[in-house]
Length: 397
Image (cartoon, rainbow, N blue to C red; front, side, top):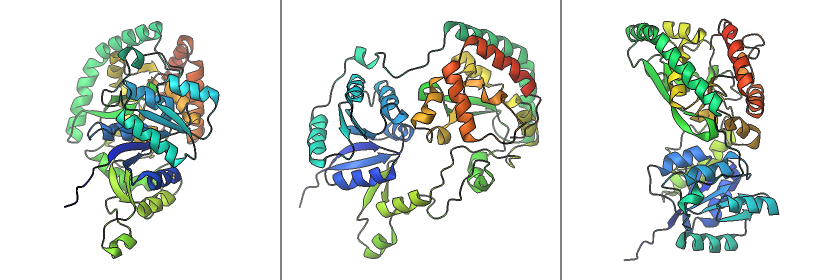
């Protein structure tokens, strides 16, 4: 009986569907290649599966799939010593030096030479680098936001006093929420904050129980909706009609986000996949009556004072984003907004709120980037003062 030789697992991270298919074709005979569109999906999958032997990322050096990705993985025990290889569109002396400084094992130019890459990949898998602990915690060239002492002191004092004063109201709100609909008082969701860090984000629950499951049927109401997704909705049926008719299993396997799919199914999905980045529904039918009142008056945001006290976020900063939004913002144009603190209120919240119609994604990102470049304690105080009248402007979101 012929022995089945298991192949080494490697991860390929790229938001470019053509590069995913190309990489799979080049190396599927040598490796089990698991493809991921961004760092979030890879980290989530890697935490619950057998670790890969090599990580390859096709990205701009300074984007979130580049240096930020490498920096985050250096601080995770399961990925700290996995060799990382970077593929860029053009190698320069500068980006080569920065990549090696940031502890990428090697850097290649796209399109890669298969034989050269394969030789290097096998060597790195057999001889993985072992980084000293002091090196994995070094200061990198890529900017990382650190909350200034004065801002952190202000956050602690402000959030502590506010929570103490609001405690009686918290009890009243909790009773109303429980009486109106079953479920927990607080809603905790994973959000992405400064430096692409993940944390539990607290709010008073303003929606009915099971609201997340209802979202799929409401996408047509999304204010940021660009096109309707027709055709493939999931990868569970991973065999294309051609493979099904052949009755011999999939002949063109891909591992996308850890799930095996047919390459043709993947190509069809990418061709019709909707490309909106944010989900925002006006007069959301999932919201309870008291929930609408809380959202119109921003009462549902008050538990975020707990996040501020914990240090997850600040009073003023860029709004922390849900995973489904943050995973779309992986280009240099958007990455800057993650180099500022996450905050309860920020520049875009107090800019033309409720006066100029619906703010576009690009306008929001421009304001977030502007805050990241010009944040200061004085500007934070100005935003706080502008937030108070903004709370009374009607916007049912």
